[in-house]
Image 1 (spheres, helix red, strand yellow):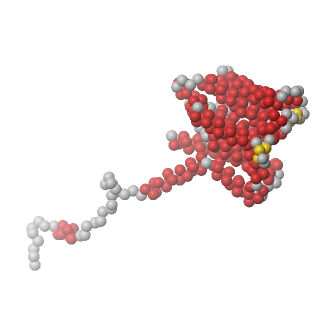
Image 2: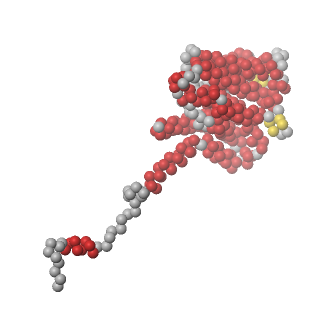
Length: 360
């Protein structure tokens, strides 16, 4: 029997005989591996939620188009598509008019009043012998003038845009009744009505104005100094002023532009209808005009929003309205669904704001 050396620990012998323990692989820094999948899952989920919120208008548009097509095959027909574009044109001009002020951090609730009042004045003028082309200039001039007055009240007199434009809209609504004397005023001047009733081959001319509008506004907001100033002032009015932007003149110019767009909507509407009725410019139209840019991603607080989103909101609301009529839903439910869409727009905007604040 071989004796161990004195002082040798038996336990050490057994330790030497044990197989080496397999160590876990480490990363480049020598640290233990981390389960990246579990940590990346919340980030992926957040990205999907943000994507859905930013593009909800297009998701809903596809859903409602599919529902309409399943309920009634006529929904996807060419005549109905033309009808959707025609109906979307007026709402598009009103939606952009409100969106311009929203981007600045203000709001213009008088756009529907401008639509009705400017159209009524133009109709009465042409009824009294004014040529159609001059009637168009009268309509547009009145809209721009009212927008200028709104801008002066907000910028110079420091009136709250919500209250001032609401009051202006009520005044203009009463003005329509006074001018028309509660009766329908017909328009026969072809120079005035051609854009609303004319056709190129079998296609209506009116949607061309919608396309030109969004192309022009996109270039204006993204390619001109004034467009960039609107975003800057809407994001932070004080910082924009400190940077040398004349915010008061910017407010006046923006409201004037908004009034002009509303007047164009008035021209298109009266041209399409061939006249003016005392109820032209209802409150429902105003609510849809507000909902279109909001559900399209324009922030109620200003400084954020894209023209492509506004277009999506306009098309979505028009598709819903026309679709409900095509599938013969009772008119009462059309109002219910419209109100629900507006409510959804406000909810989506609130969620966007909260997630944006949490990210910052």
